[in-house]
Image 1 (cartoon, rainbow, N blue to C red):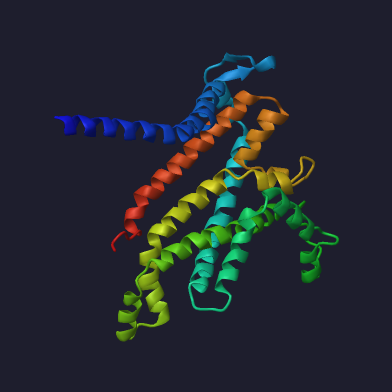
Image 2: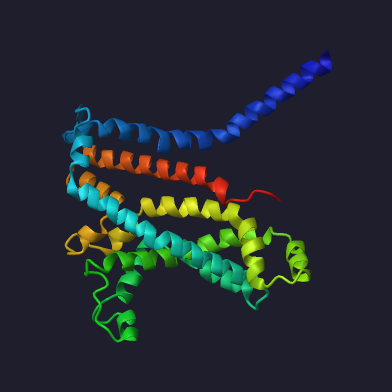
Amino acid sequence: MGKSLKKSRHGRSEAKWGYIMVAPTIIGLLVLNIYPFIDTIKLSFSKTRPFGLYEMRGLENYLQMFTSGEFWRANLNTLYFCLLTVPLGIFLALLVAVMLNTKIKGRTAFRAIFFLPMVVAPAAVAMVWKWMFNTEYGIINTMLSSKINWITNPNVIMITCAIVAIWSAIGYDAVLLLSGLQNISKSYYEAASLDGATKMQQFFHITLPMVSPTLFVVLIMRLMSSIKVYDLIYMLVEESNPALTKAQSLMYLFYRESFVSGNRGLGSSVVIWTVALIGVVTAVQFWGQKKWVNYEV
């Protein structure tokens, strides 16, 4: 009886310390994520007034959003950005990860170099690339001996943003994929070599199936990041830029409606739509993973 009571007290003590340890994370989640999201939902059904006041307007903001041509253009721009960045970015990241997984001199240094863009402030990255893409004295036009308007041409601006986005994310994705590659047992490759399989056959029949779980995670992260892109476009494309209509993403539209036009209700509606869009895309990915992701060890 005494031992049972002592164990019970010990268990309660451990549980108490467990709650204390996770409390900062839970409080941060409630204050910084859950409460703002609930407040955003509330704002999406209301019209904001001065001094932080608002009045409920029902579905008025959503009706205005769905009948706005600018909103649908932002959706198309976001979709186009995803198509430009996600497939090519993941392909290049996988290529870099495969190369870094081989026995080459300075492999650790190369990993650090590829990962470096992730620790640099996005504003600094955008400003450097903006200088490189300058029409008159940018290094890219100098190397190409051309006068391409990378920043101000509406037909080129999204490609410009995609180049910067891929360059910025390729190192992080490559490191994640590299961790997946290093978990593949070398015995698979040894057995395949004994059976006469070429390097290409080993890649498609061993590497890709075994790294597919990590590839799936990278795909979800990259799609979510591309759908909610904002800071890169904000730094590269100014308000007076004639190419803004071709580069404006959903999150950029949210910024303009909320902080430039002062219509926080409509801006909140755009946020809720973006969250719902990310949820649908993620759900489709989880549904489709059964056809190509291999979790067998």
